[in-house]
Image 1 (cartoon, rainbow, N blue to C red):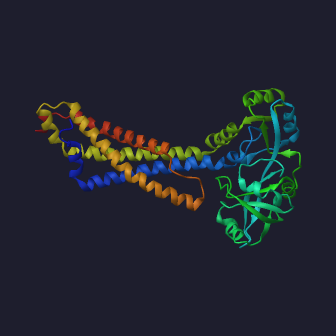
Image 2 (cartoon, helix red, strand yellow):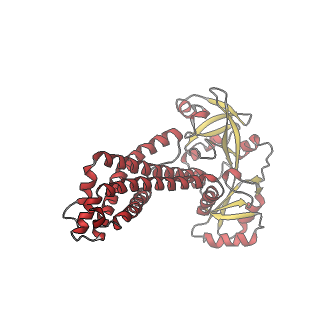
Image 3 (cartoon, rainbow, N blue to C red):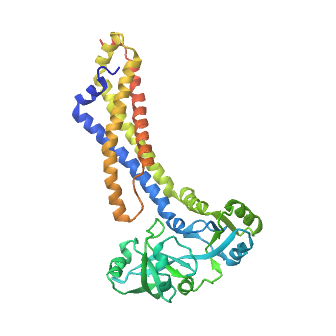
Length: 383
């Protein structure tokens, strides 16, 4: 079977056709990589805050759907959790949107605002802890350096030592520190304030109305056991989740309750179908052009299986050769997208392997369809 590389000789004989085929496969590979990359960036960016919070359990209102659609609940529920054995501390968190005024051109843009008690260890972000004393003062905020440029050149100017003063929700604020979180599909920037400053920005809110309750457990405490105890005891107006459950809760919203996740999945499917059609056309044309040669081999005694394996070899060769430029170009497009959008899009080994397998399956399906004509070829009819 491999003594004479018949499959490669047939493909390389028509070099222009081979290049066109590889370009088509590379396009399909890029399309699948970009759609999967955007989908992963959607989920990763949507859960950036979730990942940055330090807590073993999370309390939410049962009416909350996602971070962008949180509903408040009474912090009495959170304080009730302190009565359970194994609970070490609790931390209320406030979440909302307010308009940020670009200090350079005066334009307004919505931004995420997170409020917390300065004495609580809420964030895993080291820069929040470093600026905690500054954050206790009125009108002081921390700004996300990874926010989009539409909010102004806040981070570069602050790092140059300039005083940054602007408006947030119609109130005067001072940027006294930076942290790194990044934008998401829900908002393009983030700021952190203390709980009292949050209430100053959201005059319609009360101190006892919180969006997220963080629960820190004692060392070696059984999180699942305490979670079940809390669920059985507290009223049904709140739900309790593990930290990972909180992350999965957000991902589930974007997967099932918005069209974005479906669109990216559909994009992967479209790339797969486009690649299948392209490879099929190439293989079918190749089989048609060499039909007399295949018929000669049949007349010499070669079985259909041998000839079909030749076509499948061509399909695998096309898959591998088309995947390589598609993978390389996708790396460049990932970097370009990341720099332009600040979304967490990057190549992963799992995704690279998945797309490679999809490409091989795509080409194998095309080969399977293309050999149907070869299978029905009769040497007597050809000659």
